[in-house]
Image (tube, rainbow, N blue to C red; front, side, top):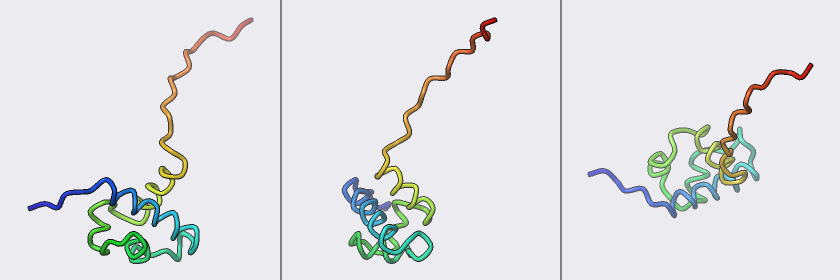
Length: 80
């Protein structure tokens, strides 16, 4: 039976990632650090993110919000 992902856990993981990346830096932060701060096991952390890079991406999205999709500018001829 597959484990169910809980939205509040993802929120806690994102907050923990921000804390760890801020305190330790990206290179020194380990997945186990984030799991400990988030209050989940290291194995459970991988239910929510696939890698440290994905975790960093999650933290960036939490801080900055998603990138809004902008409509493509219409191509118009250059005025003479």
